[in-house]
Image (cartoon, rainbow, N blue to C red; front, side, top):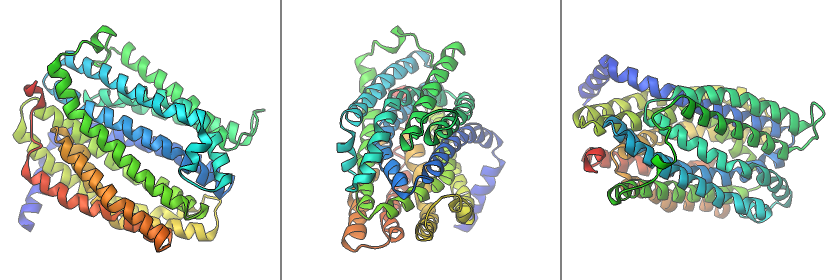
Length: 460
């Protein structure tokens, strides 16, 4: 067994073509995720100066954005599976149709979330917390930030389509610019600098809105002025055959349902946390922001897995795709060990910049340690579900794995630990993370069956 593992590692290390492809896609995606995480980190730090209630309020308000982005991610991730396979098959015409359909669905989803967030923000906030102070602060934030949802839908769609065709550098450059825009306007509107009014948490929402509008416009300009393969004219985005629609929705519907249902389930964690008090919410919000610094590496790795393997399977190179899947799992394990050590090592340096009580700081530290302990399972699932299984269109199994894990294990654990047994937030978090162990076991079992190894482009 050990000889087999070391042999696989040795063969992966010698596969220069694979490593070059993986780094070329994974690194820019990880960098873009890191930039977004830095924005969230800076937001939380700046809002943190306003106190634990403000941190909790914004953290809970952003759960609406979290569910929305998961739904959009489901749309663009499922669409990206097809786009990557069409790109491997040289089918530009159908890629442009995927762009049109994905844009339509993503923008429609953004409107569905924008309306309640603007019309009745207090009612939305009451879903997550009973604290009147948090409700009022969160409602003011939510009303403004929700206006950015359509721009986010457009940006995410084009970024996913660019990624599927191997174009990953432009979104990183754009994110690098918009991060400074966000930070500048945070500083301006949260505290009332440069003659602007001091808006508090609402100022952070306004800064986010401005940054996302700039990001969306910049990505559209890059796509169309650069004449990217996804730069579809209006007519090219529509006019679908029955066979195309059948394949699109059979591939994407389980992914959309997966992300949305899974997102609703994880949002219920916030309902449990929200009823444990503002200190618990502040602790898990800060801990999650710090964890995201490490998680972006696996977002990049899973994105590279989906794109590279989709391209290979779309080109009919199934044996090579199977070998690449094994390589990605090896890479995932190596990066996980490094990431867990890094996360634990830097936790107090980052916690120290927040204006929080020693009790909250200690809770944050314990949550991060729990995260590191469960990292091997969580990051394996990132690469397995989002990368390997989805790349071959095995989206129904992904739906089953994610949703059964969160609803049968994660949600019950959150409410049992937080509200029934009244455990500390770090113990409740560890109980919730047991879902990752379940998913890893059954995900590996599905991987061994090889039912994901399919050429979808040839099936149309």
